[in-house]
Image 1 (cartoon, helix red, strand yellow):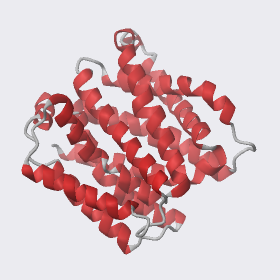
Image 2 (cartoon, rainbow, N blue to C red):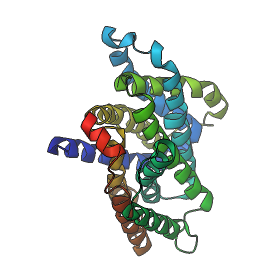
Image 3 (cartoon, rainbow, N blue to C red):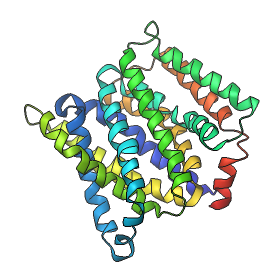
Length: 293
């Protein structure tokens, strides 16, 4: 992979890694559903001027069903689950658990499209689950079990969507597919959000966090995501999950004074090592993505 794409992956990891910190700040005042819808509405205003251009506008009709699937599975559900999970977990734990997206993607690709799995990859999966157990074990962490399960379920939806984007929508324009999925999800969530509006106007810090989540982490971040998928493929792009724990831990410690315990470090390292092995020697699916790019 070219150096410039590694740079873009790193920048995307920094942007998405920061999202967990801002989710932690904004969710208590907005509530999970209102925050997610606000985030999606703001991101929609970034994509709309692009998608309403003449070269894109006619490309939606043939793929609107795929767009609807991604609106629900890649945006509405996982965004809400992570916001809900923030009530019982520090932002660094959310970032670490989100890293499981990488080896979840490998498992789904194996089940769905018959991707080959080596002994080394199975070893990586085992290490990853050990790392998760260390982090979600109540004896080792203050994270609640329901928050851990919510974050892991959200990561599973991200993984499913990654494989879906790559295999079910090969001929679709990725900008149209992903951009309209954000707009669709904002529209879908709006009627529900009416019943979950915050009781009072959120603080400046919470509003600023929501704006960052919508404009930067989602809007600008997903533009980079589209670029990477076009150039290196969706599954390869999912390795951005490697960077999220690192940046999640850094941002949480610097801005939220979150404690970096030995348990967090050990659990994070085990998960990252597991992800490395789980995604090595991937001869079928990932190589086909690289060749296609």
